[in-house]
Amino acid sequence: MFRLLATDIDDTLLAHDGSLPKANREALRKLHEEGITIVFCSGRSDLSIRTIAQGILEPDDDEYYIAFNGALIVTAGTRTTVARRFVTMTAIGVLADYARDHGLHLQGYSGDDFVVNAGSVVADRYAEATKTRYQVSDDLTAALPEGSPKLLFIGENAHLTRHRAAIASLNETLPAEHRFVTMFSKPHYLEIVATGVHKGNALVRLAGILGIRHEETLAVGDGENDAEMIRAAGTGVAVANAHDAARAAADEVLASSADDGVMGEIARRFFG
Image (tube, rainbow, N blue to C red; front, side, top):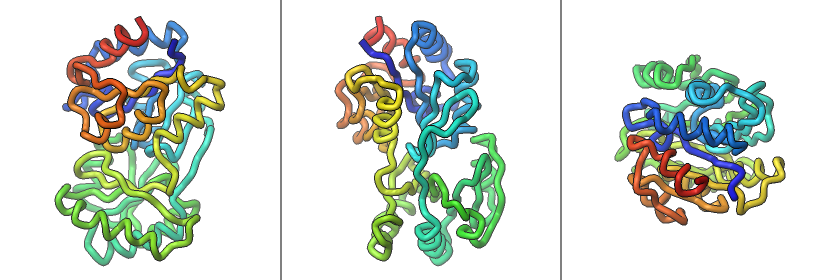
């Protein structure tokens, strides 16, 4: 029997157009009423997750948000930090230099806001999409003195793909405690998190804190950044239109996608 359901948000819970299908909302509400711990997982900030999740469940501390691809775990009600691990100031400095030298959009996160290396229509669109605010700073290390849960390069997929290997190679200049990994959460979002940070490790850690056994956890997602979470769960599933990495990690590939109300299929197949 499953006691915990971890779900990605974009293109898993939310439809392709950003809407929340009624079937997904109703299935999660019913599962929560039956005592299932619901964990919303995303590359988004916990504040941005909350704007989506509160339309499904009234925020309470028996629900959890795994934010920034696993860098931060908080309770839904009081937003109490359960665990965190940030990209260090040293790594931010190296990555900010690379972004400046190559004209790339780079942003980090401080509290509920994000900090961007240059103001642009890209920053405006991101703020609108995530319902967050931003500051502009040409010195991200000074603007992010505690580090950042993640950094985000935004641009055309082909352009970011060309830079990805070079960005990853910057690790060779850093001591182990300052190293990072790269992943695409969307084709135009290249994410940077500290080494060892991913949704899978966060899920395992949270389940351990809650005393939920591995085999009692189920995770569902669609993206490259969901693969570790899908693999780490007792049962990992991918939506029908998932990225190849998510499909390869999954124990089951579903017949439906977010647009089809995939949570209804999950409820029937795994919680019926």
